[in-house]
Image (cartoon, rainbow, N blue to C red; front, side, top):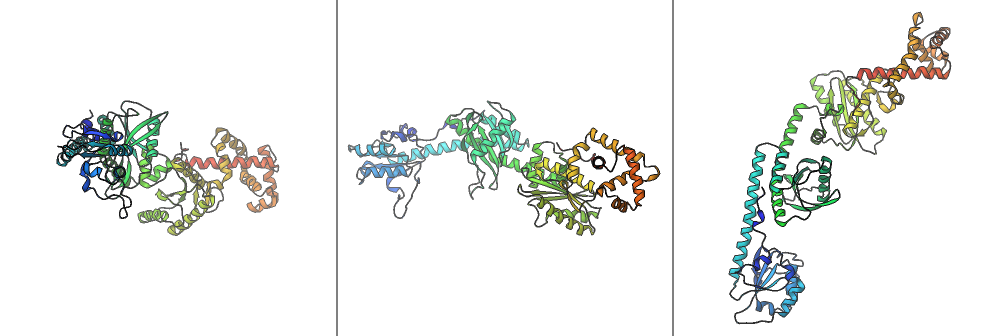
Length: 570
C-alpha cells in the first residue's frame, strides 16, 4: 500500500494566504498563486539584482516571498520596474505591510503586480516579519520532514527486499506495490532487465518497446557531475503504441557512471499531484538499491566468467541459453553483438600450458588488426574472433589472416594453415563464420590452397554445399564415381586418371606427365574409364560431370568429419 506522501502538500502562495496568522488580502498577480514558497526575506536584505557588477542574476530568488513595508514599495522610483525585476528573479510573492491607521494608494502597485504575474498581498498591520518568517520556515521544514520520513520508509522497505537477495524482479515488484503502478528496470542502453505489471498488462515486446521509448526520450545517460551522483526523478511524456503515457524515471548510477534507469509508468496519462510525489520518492530511493543489485549481479557474472573461461567456445558454437545470457556475457567481454565479425582458425599441435596461454594473448595484441579481437585454444585448434567494420572488404580479412599466420608460425616454429569464414553480423554471424572457417580448414587438407585461405576463395565448394548436403547430391556423386572405382581392377586408379586429365584441360601428354605414365597407357586407361562411365571422357560435358561429382564428394567427406562438432547455426 502506498503511503500518502502528499498529506502535507508543497507550500504555495495560495496555501500561505490561507493561514490565519497571515491575515492577508490578495491585491494583484492572481496568476502566480501556485508558485512554491521556500523562505521569507525582507526587501532590504535581498542580494543585489542585475547591474554592471551582476549582469545576470537569473532566478536566484526562486521560492522566496519578500516582506516589505508599504512605504518602501510606494516610495520606489518605478514600482512597475521593481516588481518586474523581482518576478524575473523568481520571487514567489510580495507581502506588503502598511503602517497602522494609514491608507496608502495601492493602485500603481496592483497594476504592476498584475503586469508581472507576481502576487501582491496586503498584510494586517500586526503581521510582523518575525511572525511571517517563522510561519514560512515551520511550514517548509514540516513538508520537507514529511517527505524525508516517507523516503526513509520506502528505503527501509526496499532495503529489506534487497538484503534478502531476491534480485531485480523482487525489487521491481516491491516498487510496483508501493507505487500502485507498473515499474520497469532498464540497463544503460534501454534493454529491459525486469518489470512488474500493475493496473495494465502488455506483451513482452510491448514492454520492451516502452523501455526503448523511455530510453530515447530520456536521452543518453551521461556521467553525473561531481557532487550530483544521487538519483533525481524526472517526469517524461512517452508515446507507447497509440497512446501517450506519463513516466517517472530516475537514472541508476554506480560511482557516477550510468548503469540504467528505474521507471514508474503512471496508470493515468494525467496523474494526480500526490501520486507523482510518491512515485518520485520511490524511484529516487529505489535507484541506488537497483544499482547495488546490478553491480552484485555483474560481479557474479564476472566471477563465473573467470571460472568458466568458455565464452569464445560458447560463442562460436551458438550455445547460449537465451538472449539475456548472450547480452550479459557479451557486455562482460565487450563483444559488440551489433557488429560484423569473422572467425579465423588454425590447426596447431599441443605445445604445453605456457605456450597455450601466451599464444592467444599474442594474437589479441596484434597491431594493425581489427578493433576487437579475442582468441582461445580449443584442443589443437586456435580460434580467433575478429571484428570488421561494415566498410571493411575481403582484403582486410586476408591481411589479418596473413598476420595471424606469421605470428602462429613463429610461435610454433613451423608453418601452419590458417582458414577463415566470411564476416557476418552478431553472435549468429560468428557461429556461421566459424562453421565456414572449419570447412575451409578441413578442405585445405584435401585440395591445393594457399597457407591463408578464406571460405569465399573456395567458391566452387561454397556453391555446391547445398547439393552436397542433399540426398540427391550424394546419390549423384555416388552414381558417377562408383563405376570408375569398380572398374579399377589391375589398371590402377581410374578416378585419379580422369581427374588428372580434367585438371590438364584435356591435354593427354600433360596428364600423362603429371601421373608419370606412358602416353599409350594413358590412352588405354581413359578408354576403360569411358566404358565404365558409359560416356566419352574426352567430351566436355562428361568431364564436367565427373569434376562436379568429385567436388560434392570431397565436400561431403569434410562435412562428415565435422558433423559432430558443426551443426548449421540457428
